[in-house]
Length: 247
Image (tube, rainbow, N blue to C red; front, side):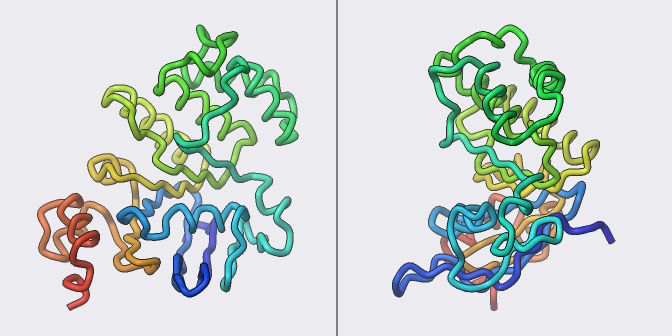
């Protein structure tokens, strides 16, 4: 059994009488990419924010590399990072300036070497001194992912990392992330509405519905277990008729 880099136990988040996340438990192992799927409002982003310690759970616990985030958030997040299309880097700073500042925030040792290696890895050489605000969506995504890998995380949280990218750029990004999981030993929690993408990159998927984990399994096998032709059909059923999957 591979070691779990993330362990979520009985996580719950209430907003008044509204249950956003309801008794969710799962793990992410080293070298594993887990897809956290579900329609809008299912609880995906709320779950990620609790894993990051941005939101405090109403109940339950999150541990990263064996450290309870409620006990020692700084230690738990030392080898954790995050990227999402809705959290762009400061547009008035260049690619290098952004990576430099974040490397200082993360306490990256030998940051010049680390920045150079990531600029090479994400094909950002020609944008090194370009302000992030004038980059295309695909270029900004590559910079954001470079930022997310600065501290060599063994847990990487990706919220719709390829949304709005053209198919060619999205494929390149998927390859880099897959390579990171395999070669660098990272565990990755990935949310996406692109079921083709999920089936291609994820080792395992969790389907959330109304804050609960409804289904879990191999994305290539799970649809057939519920009589669906593919993952997209299964996603649509989870979104529209989740109770039919429990019969």
